Length: 240
Image (cartoon, rainbow, N blue to C red; front, top):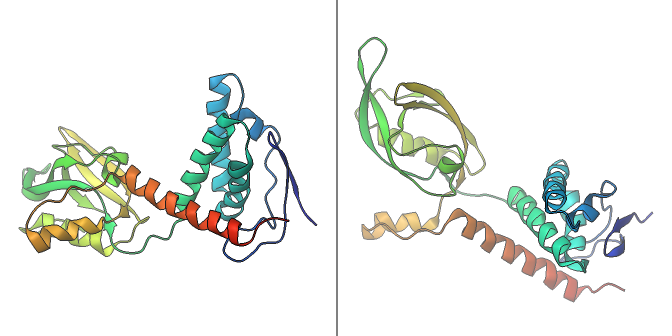
């Protein structure tokens, strides 16, 4: 039985899926008024509606992506189209396959710190935090001292290598807990690792630091490729 989703743009009818596209079978029914809120004349209502739509979408990524793709493609109201696109992009990024090694997003050097018993211990000093990376989102800061992560304690003379190897052993999307000394504070910060940029391999190959794309640029590029595939499926298998 087709499910009818009411939206500002009119009635969006579900149909059987087709190869090469998302299809529209089993579309989720959006909560009443949620899409309408995206086009409301009050900015605060639009902004709140976008947040609520994202929270709703995270509960069922596959189903909500299907529903929001149709709304994004068929919306007449520019504000609805813009905000539904932003939510759709966020959900697609969350669902993307993330092969390869994990990436934290810091520049670092070896350091030491004195524990409560006065014993000097190895640590990793953060010298730079790349904007938009896992480290940035976890609110790590330059001059922070990483004294350990998860169950790992730095007990050797190469804490930077130990940290780097541990991060590489994880995958994008994995969460790690970092033990951080910031001034006199001792913090535990959780970071959700991102995908390691391929350009980092140039450091090993050429001995120079490459200009790395921002995470936001990488996400946008991925989303644009995703949209191209969906639109190609729409052209190859047009609606009746």
